[in-house]
Every structure is written in structure tokens, then in C-alpha cells.
Image 1 (cartoon, rainbow, N blue to C red):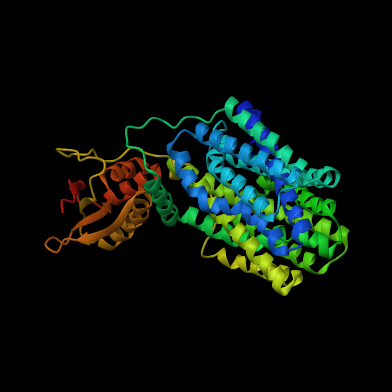
Image 2: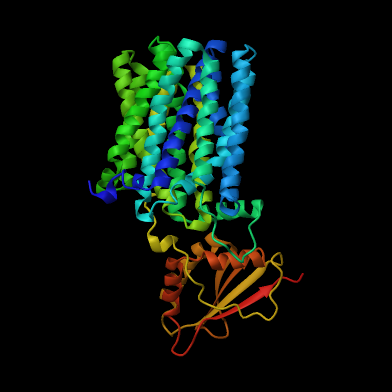
Length: 526
């Protein structure tokens, strides 16, 4: 494996190595908390639905809060955002540990405090994920993201295993005490290696609602990001069944206790770590879609085996395969997202990945838990396996790829803003017209080329786009788009990438000799 494909390359950067190690400790604590809460729920209630609802309490906040948190991460001080969320999480962990140790922790209070911790994690995750790779060169981002995935999945192996042992020895309360200290380790890493500040800009800062709409608009009109979001949502929704029903598999299928549940989680985490060591080389050899297809088939087979087999050794081996498939798919989706989003929206792209994957995971966990209670564990796992295999049909309409450097590098605007009196940032809507007088006989080729401008214009801020032909002069066309405000228009101009400018140059090649594109700006008055 060459250094460019080695997951160890980014670990040569001291700041990334420190953040990676402390993040791994935080992930271990999160894994311990989730395992202990799920098994405590089984002991308190005996309900598959309530046990699965722990996963929902952990991951549903991602669905609710990740996108607003991504906007804040793109527009505010990431260090303060992460630190504030971690301090709030420490308070919630202390309260959870105190209630359980004191014998006052019932199902409702445990679920509520786990949900609060999930909210804190949701707030900090987009900022942490987008900043932890800042010290690493861009060409090593896939390896850095894979290394983070390895740490996360190693934590899934270590955390539940440690939690199972500690739970059996001292009880759930002491597991929650450990999470207080692991959260503190994460806070110390942010204090020591703070995220880089956003580059200074003369443009007005985006507000929360406008920034949220910008992120959603970008994802909808970026085919690369949209394909990744659809595919990860389908994969997570189906795969959540196995993760959510692991405590039920341990108790009813295998007849084991908390240690057996922890071992199942540990096997999945071990398989994920093993997969992470080779996934970079496999991706470069086979491509993204082949990796995802293999992961879908493997995970579906693991769920079918878990549905029918009651031999512990075979189930443990299958869980390792399932963990490897999960890691291969999720690291591939994550890499495709982060490497395909320009800097101005990268935290929001991470947040949308979280919303798609963990939102589907949270809702899926509750759904499969309810199916298991109503129709039985075997039926739930078989149905989830079939749904996972059906996800292969998405490869043709939503192919995966990683964006090239020129597609995410912001360029310099083509034209100067020739306006007499620049309006206030809030003024609008703003209509922009670009006139083209093209060579005769090239109308179709021109229209085919300029139609490709619709996606980047809409992606970067336009709410409307259309191309018009001048009825009085057939060789003249006008491109017209509308942006909500003058501030949004300035942001749109700044967001255009090198690839967008190359497309504009291609459009201008159709201009008649001696002609140039003429841009006009209009502000709404009534």
C-alpha cells in the first residue's frame, strides 16, 4: 500500500493524531453509555420496543439538530460551539449516573437523559467532523476519514465490551460515571487543538434559517451529494434493524446476558476495524459503487443468518462480517460527502449526511423494534435483509463518485458588479440577467451547454432560473435567475467553483465575434 492509500499517513500530523485519539476515547464512552442504557432497559422492562428506543434516543437528535448545528459550524466559532455542547453533555452524564446509582433511574428518566446527551452530540458533531481533518492535506482526507471511522468502530468494539464487563461487575451507574470522564477528554482535546477559524469575509454572515435553506438547496441541486444522501438513507434504514435488535438477539436467540450482548457489539466493531485497514485500497481498485454493492449483500446475509441461526459462535462470526460491511459502506458514503463539498458548506454537508444516515437509523430502529414485538424477531430481520438487498436497485439512478478538486475549489467571479448604488444586504429579491448574442446556426448546442448552468446557479442560491430567446433578435438569448436578497446574491457569486467558471467559459465560446456577455441587475421595488 502506497503512503497515499495508507490510513497511517494523516496520523503523522500531531494535531490530527491528538484529536483522533481523544475522539476515540469519546466514542468509547458513547458506546458504553448506549450499551448500558439498552441492557438496563431490557432488565427494567423486558420490552424489545423500549430497548430499541434507546438507539432512537441516541440518534434521533441527529435528525432534529444536525443541520442547524451544521449551519452554526459553517458560520460561527467552532471551538466555542463544540466546547459548549461538551460541557452540557457532562452535566447530563453526571445526572444520569447519579440517578441510576441512587436507584431513582426509571425507563423514562434514562431515555430522557440519553436523549439529552444525544442532543449535545448532535450539536458538536458537524463542527468536529469538519474541523478534525483541517490539519490534513486534502489528498489525504479519504485516509483521515477512514481513520476516524476505524476509531469510531473500534470504540464500538471496545466500548460495549467494557460496558458489559463493568455492568455485570458494578452495575449500569458506574458505566455512566465513566462517560463523564470520556466526555472531559474530548473537551481537553478541543482546548489543546482548537479548530481553525473561518477565513475572514466582507460578506454578511448567513443567519440560521437562511443558512439552513442554503444547505438544503445545495444538496438538492448537487447530484454528487444528493446521490450519497439517498443511498446512505436507504442503507441505514435497513441496517438499523440488526443494531437495534442486538440485545434481543442476545437474550432470546442466544440466551446470553449483558456480556453476550457486549460481545456481539464487540464482534461488529472488530470487523469494522479490520475493514477500515484495507478499505482505502479496495476503493481505489474497485470503485465506490462496487464497495457499496458488496456491503449491501454481505449485511443482508448477516441479518438473515441472525434471524435463523442459534449457534453463538456462528452468530459472533457473522457479526464481524456485518461490522466490516457497515464500516466499508459508511466510510465510503462519508468520504464521498466531505470530499465533494466546497468549504463554505462542508459542515452542512456533513450534517446532511448525519441527518440522512442517523435519522434513518433512529426511525428505523423504532420501526424494526415495533415489528419485532408484533411479528417476531425472525420476521423483522428477514424483512430488513430483503430491504437491504433491494437497495442495490438505487445504483443506476444514484451513482456514487467523489468530487474533483476543481469542483470544490471556489473561483473568482467573471464580472465586476457595475451598479451605481449598491442596495442593503436585506434588499430583494434580486433578478440577474446575462445577455448572449451567439453565432448563427449554433442555437441547439448553445442551449444544451447553458442548460447545465441551471444546477450550479440553483445550488449556490438562485430560487429561479430560465433561459429566454429574444423574439426580435433570434440570435440573442437572455439567462435570468432570481436570488432572495442582495446578500444572498453576493454569497452566490463567491460560491462559484473553478468548474462553474470553466462551464461559463464554455458558454461564452458561442458568442458572436466581437460580442461579450452583458450582465444586468434588478432589485424588486414593489
